[in-house]
Image (tube, rainbow, N blue to C red):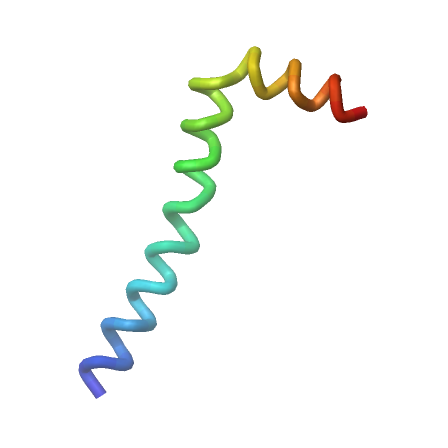
Length: 41
C-alpha cells in the first residue's frame, strides 16, 4: 500500500516538474531553440 502511494506521488511530482524543466531549457537555449525551429520549418 505504501509503495503504491509513494509511486503515485512520484508520478504526480514528475508530471508537475516536467513543464518547469522544459521551460528552463527553452529559456536557457532560447535563441538556439528558435533558430532550430526556423530551420526545420
